[in-house]
Length: 377
Image 1 (cartoon, rainbow, N blue to C red):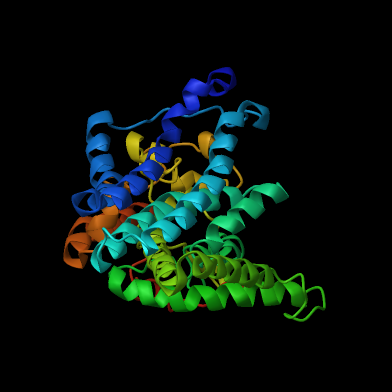
Image 2 (image 1 turned 120 degrees about the horizontal axis):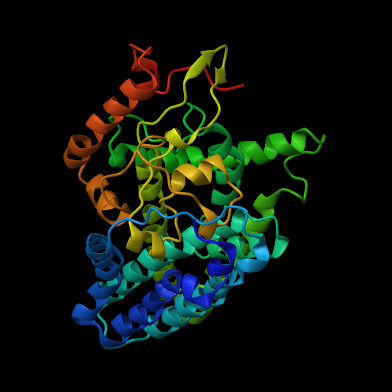
């Protein structure tokens, strides 16, 4: 176990800061054009897949009782990313919109690369920030989400996903045999509605209408409108289009990760709309060292759902005895998810083994496969 005094050293946090190298990479691609525009997605996906193979697994756990005062270098990482992403995104909108050395396709490619970074890193960091009790950190998370026009993710994730994961009420629990290309349009539609409904119901418990100014959707809309306006001022119509390209890419990055995290894993229905408590076994775990550096331990997802408020350096790794394991890290698994026949060949046997191991008493999985069990109360 990693002791708090070891965790407190800046050297321990340093590998997680490597995500910051992606920011000059997107600038380099935009300045050079051509082949250099391939670098952000190649580094984010392929290079980290290679590094996972080189560095192997990290099975070591930090002391979960480590106080926040020993985590300053990890907290600084997520906070520092926000202004740097903001300057990179809008600086590139200004630059690329008027760049004469880039043709239309190259401008699109440049902001596809930006979207890979704002999705794989930016949304992931917003996820860490939104789970904290600090109002300042939650605001930073909101700013990151507004940069990709996905502000409702905070409400959906905190009020719906964590509460109802593995049940028919959670849109982002991917169903067994559901290909990503069916999953994606479904969650785009359902998540916004479920997030808005959750905030509306929360206000109704206080006898307030959804139009009450405490509804965070008004903050979401204002922040997103400000981001679009800034893109327009800096780059005109082209700037807005480039902003939308990166936002769309980032959202896709988020949802393909969501697809991987819980594919086929459902909580047992106990009858009358009651479900078993969330356990580590209801999320896929991956201990791959390099991709967990890039994704600040997001792949230790089993522990995140078990202890949602635990900061990322303290997330625990689970072995096969307690949680199902992905064969590769997210860089490989998200690519596999884009090829449904390959995905089913790799993952469906693992889901079936998981079912036999934890729920041998369930012989008919049809209702679980189609999300037809009663909604949780």
